[in-house]
Image 1 (tube, rainbow, N blue to C red):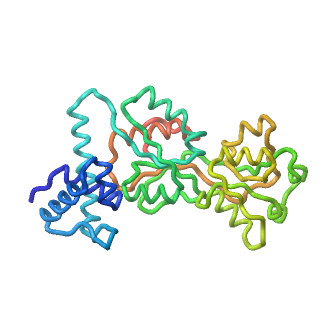
Image 2 (tube, helix red, strand yellow; image 1 turned 30 degrees about the vertical axis):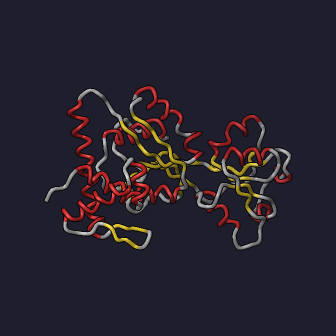
Image 3 (cartoon, rainbow, N blue to C red; image 1 turned 135 degrees about the horizontal axis):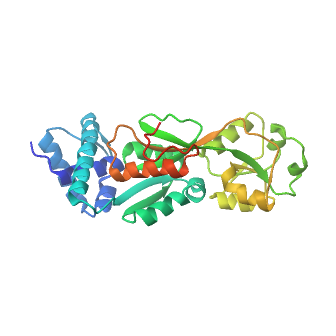
Length: 304
């Protein structure tokens, strides 16, 4: 049985994307080349790696087993290449699932560190909702991802909590609710709420609190910056991570309303469980914990 490394690379890409066409595009191959390589791999192993269901594909049980080995083999190949190459230092690309609140307000020190210290490591930031990030990590499309969720255990993933994220309900200083000494859920059900799209953990938790009694519909905005502009102009109230509105609160452009969320979320870093981590991925995890974690763990400490 002969298995070529390039066939494993192609197999891993197809398994991650579940698409021969997209895999061919990312690998700069003709689609026929991808198909030929997968068939050669299946012939060599004597098993089918994918079920073909019309225009869709999915891994067979044999394919799922091979994917685990393929990732370990390719990680070892990369480690060997880096070790033999000697002093070139960390390099390559890390695909990182993230979100605006993390990218804009938590990540700058980490991005600056890699830009100056490890310029050969390309950090490819992929905006996505937490559920999409978890799925992409399990499929291997993302190398690592940031989550902002209530839950800290995620099946199939390893993760570490970087920070508790305090939430604050904000409004324009002239908003009617800004004059209230305290607020009830009934008060909040009577006003417009500006929010991110469904699938954002704190938005979904807030909407669940208001559920059960008719309330004004959520006004969905594409970005936190757009939400903040809408709040400042008096369009409604919004529940946001405190870190995202700290500057506006300090300047008096917004005011914090007297309502404490009965739930909390945490910023987390997650990666596929059981995978062999490349030196670049280990470096990213270590530095994220050093620069972004609130409780200042020592550099290189293992994730909890």
